[in-house]
Image 1: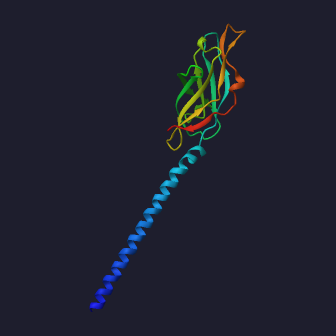
Image 2 (image 1 turned 90 degrees about the horizontal axis):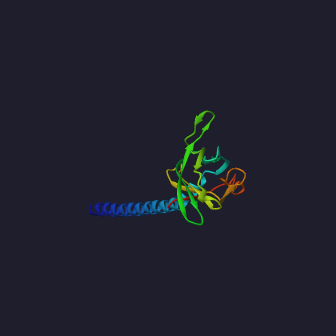
Image 3 (image 1 turned 60 degrees about the horizontal axis):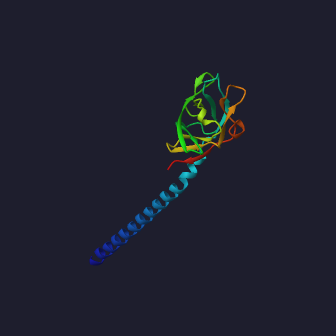
Length: 180
């Protein structure tokens, strides 16, 4: 009888030790999975990045602003938070107005197509600038897309109007980065 009780106690101890080892192994597996997910998270964010580029630069009249149409050819499920223009030589930042545009007679509010407005400011003549589009992606992650540098020029035949040198900006994709 005593042998039976001792055997039962030994098997209970062995079972408890086995359960503890299995629990520790499961915990180690969870920790490794969490670390791998953190390391792969940035790659996942970049796999759904938009592909912003300026498709048209236009203006109407002498004091009117410059209007740029920005198209997103990939990952349209984003929400634009703000658009900032940075003047390179001065480091001056200006928040710009933007609005979603209609496609097929309906507004698209997923960052697919929108218009940026730059006010007619003669202090910008000859300056180099870039756009930073801050947006929230499909995974609710804050990201930023940066345009190539472009040059403001003086449109000679049009009453000294501010314009953008198109070869520095049209159809060139913006770079994407995660906002930390």
